[in-house]
Length: 196
Image 1 (cartoon, rainbow, N blue to C red):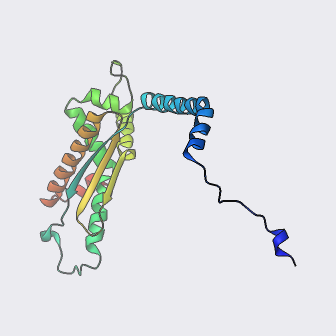
Image 2: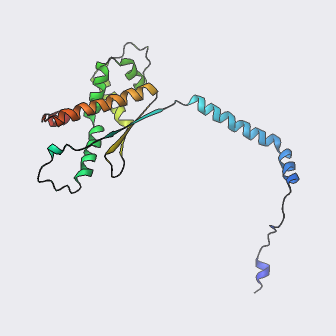
Image 3: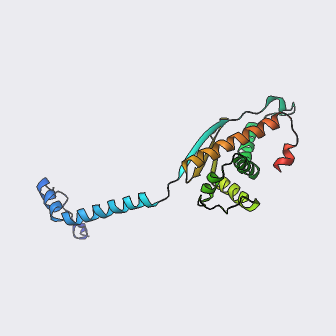
């Protein structure tokens, strides 16, 4: 068999000079400028027409109350389970409902309307049970709670279309969580009924 006939030969040894490259660029300068201008236009259009989203993040350190530990606890994976429990509590409907009620008690009606996407001038809007549930669900949907592996640090993030709202809601969430945790640590056993 003659392998030389079946192989294609490519001449890669041809080098292009700088003057040849400049000539090709100038020859197609209208096409290059049109592509660059259209790309720039669409980037600017996208930047100015999309709704900005703001993400607020905070971190908390959780530690298990040593007084609540039983002498029967052998601590087999309990530390990780405790952190997972705290993350679940932070993401719970109970906590998000309490956050909405706390914000309503602080007269933050306009902030909550903005978070729901309702125009501030809508004076007919009433915060009834259905709208409180919507707000609570939206908080849970936009909330991210993460734990860094092998640490007691929990990172909590909230995304909103208003930078002040994301910080306000996140700070209120942490405040509500601290109040609940303090109440539970003080030995109030009614927290199970409240949580469930």
